[in-house]
Image (cartoon, rainbow, N blue to C red; front, side):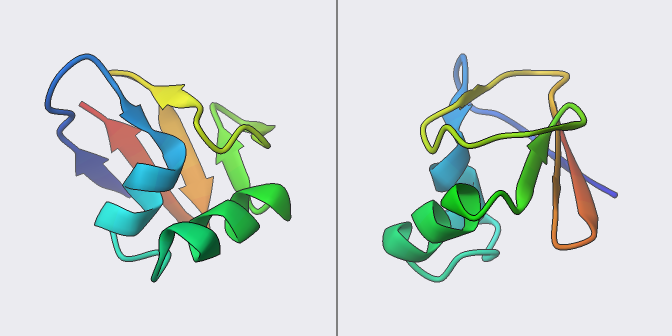
Amino acid sequence: MQNFKIKGEFIELIQLLKVLGIAETGGHAKIIVEDGLVKLNGEIEYRKRAKLRVGDKIEVDGDTIVME
């Protein structure tokens, strides 16, 4: 599990995947989300531009990321 400090009100899901290096490009990030490989707070998330806020938990590729 790792924590991610949000700068501002939110970060979009595909941006987070790119920043953390889970996705190599924006297109790769979109594919990861479209394929249902990301969970937001325990539910599969298909919205590429879902706004992640403090307290949200993302699960992808066996890792959990908590928004701070």
